[in-house]
Length: 79
Figure 1 (tube, rainbow, N blue to C red):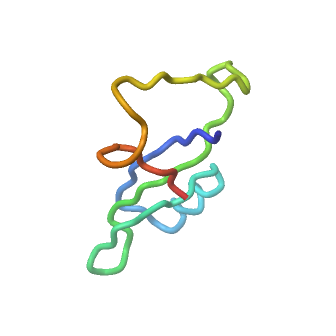
Figure 2 (figure 1 turned 90 degrees about the vertical axis):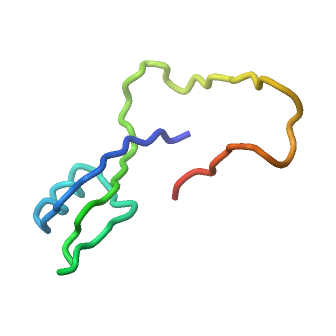
């Protein structure tokens, strides 16, 4: 499973966007000012290594009752 690192950015210029792209950042969403310049943006990139666990997966136990439908707070992956 890919783990993501996120960053909130403000007042970006085109050269700054290019630099972020070279560093592996991808703009997820952006807000623009009245002149059409990026006012703020949310960027993400895949996390590199770290954490040392390799491909080991952690399992989680659910608390509370039942599995199916309704009321869950699950949010799907951002693409």
